[in-house]
Length: 115
Image 1: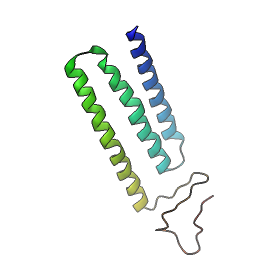
Image 2: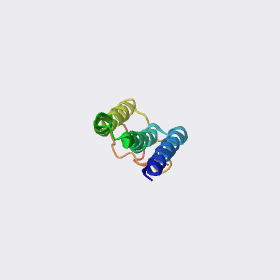
Image 3: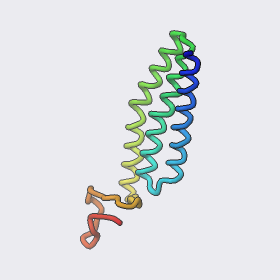
Image 4: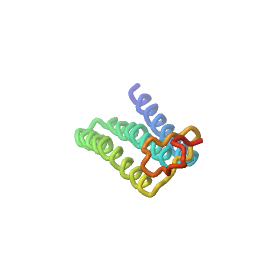
């Protein structure tokens, strides 16, 4: 019975990662692509990593937990670094309805909202 549960987790992880790849391809700007990429790592890869605990070996379980903790710490930091680099390079939001509330690189004649 537990083998079926782990099979479901593998399929779920692969499904989330596949949807994340489609999100990275289809999203219009850097910031939305970052969102799709970070959710893919946290939700997809961590589910697949936790599925490795099916072996019930202490060393594998400890390494998997360590891997998940490292992913939880490094994924938001790396996403923030890439988003900050895009912001400093004046990467504009091009998604419909996006609002740039920073106001740091807007001119006087530029509206504070974007279509």
